[in-house]
Amino acid sequence: MKKQTVAALTAGLLIAGSALANHKATDSTPAEDLKLYRDYFMKKFPGVPLNEFQNGVYAIDKVSRDSWEAIEEFPPYEPMIEDGEEMWNTPFKNGKTYADCFPDGPAQRKNYPHWDAKRGMVVTLPMAVNECRVKNGEKPLKWAKGPITRILAYMAYESRGQKTNVVIPEGDAAALAAYNDGKSFYFARRGQLNFSCASCHVESAGQHIRADILSPALGQTTGWPVYRSKWGELGTLHRRFKGCNKQVRARPFKPQGRQYRNLEYFLTHMSNGIEFNGPSARK
Amino acid sequence: MRKSALSTVAIASILAVSGAIGARSAHAGDQASNVEFGKKTAFTRKKGNCLACHYIAGGTAPGDIGPPLISMKARFPDRAKLRAQVWDATSNNPNTRMPPFGKHKILTEKEIDAVVDFLYTL
Image 1 (cartoon, rainbow over the protein chains, first blue to last red):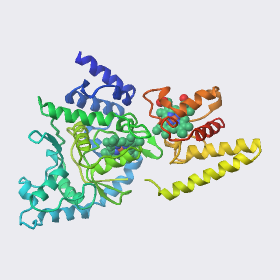
Image 2 (cartoon, chains in turn yellow, orange):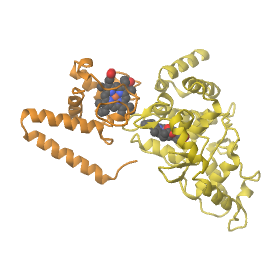
Image 3 (cartoon, each protein chain N blue to C red):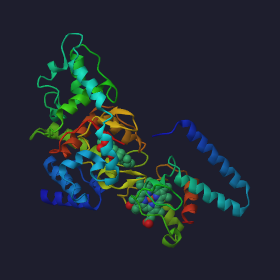
């Protein structure tokens, strides 16, 4: 019976990604999803190796890739990695440093987002950074841009090459519920323009929306924080979530609120096995 | 991404003025200005933004999520059907990616009529 649902789901994905919206999130398990999404994108973009998806739209579009490669040769985010390193090494007022919160060092990307069973919630890396600050008597940093992106840029840089490995712990109903919540969010239509995330990044991936090519959902979480030419600075993943919600004229949610953390949990899991490569540059 | 509120107001008042001029002119001119208004509505990003997804003659940098909008009269002899597609594309295809312009009040009824007039010139 399970098999049948998965077959239906696959058919839905292949015919129209948005058909998935008609399926309940609980119709397939995280492990089944992983295979489904991966197969869908690998079929849609034949010849693109799994790990290449870490480069977003540049994995699938030769034309924009050339100018992007030129940008990545002299990356605009380089000074921000250095700023972040300085933040990492500068003691808090109480004399402690980030290293007291992250004893294995700054290369933490592979550990996030993760399910914290004791607290019953998804914990993200930006959240862990701010919790470290607060624990040591410092003010938390703003979530979307500014100093937080610099410490994250340094940590991401030190984590380059680590593989995405989001775990939804077997038998933990609350963890599965958080994952399914993120998944439902992903496939729900919202806003005056009535789009789901999947309308653009599953169903229309590789197509043009006006002059922009839509990136595939697979690999979208590996390159953060991202330096966008449009922003002229680094931004966090949740800043991008907000932007994508706003462009369909939907009310955005709070960065690091439950909705976006669960969304990150679902979306990052989809990229399991793909290497982290942040920070990165985007148009 | 969004322009300032000011430019929206400016566009809205330009549209209102052109609408008013249209109302005063003779019948043939009326029709022409409605087509012009429909074209403007279809092309303006804050309005129809149809070019995000469709090739339309006269528009630049079209997307390719939807089919090219060509030979509309031959393909949609029934005006009501064409209008319904613009008003709520989900009625024709529940899984469509095309926004429901009338149902979600993205465009007014008048704007949709004008867009349909414009589509019939394609």
